Image (cartoon, rainbow, N blue to C red; front, side, top):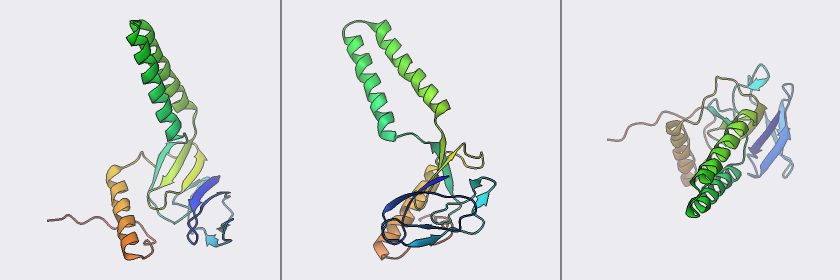
Length: 168
């Protein structure tokens, strides 16, 4: 399985292959050896982040967001041009074609598991149903945790994020 993670020492983005029997990964930039968390595997897939040990992961398609945005923009521009020249059938055909392409890509593209805390990407192919789509509340909790950590100059906690306390 491919793992893309930020090194804990130099913060450089690393991409490496990890097998179930591996116990550590080494940063190619600073040669820092990072231990993989114990009990991180569930079958052939990670049960927790291999970069930081966090249990909160979300599943998404392994597709470039920039390319996806470019496709949406291209579809909108091309259909608008066809509409401006009074070809509504062609304009709708362009939109339908881009929609069909999007549907095919969704079926074909593999899954990736992403860590809420360190943003490590676990290229797993087909992700287990235990991991859902992005949870905005949980994502905001981890974003606030990162901001607090940056302000205090400390290191992030090792376990799952503590529940956010309601403000009064």
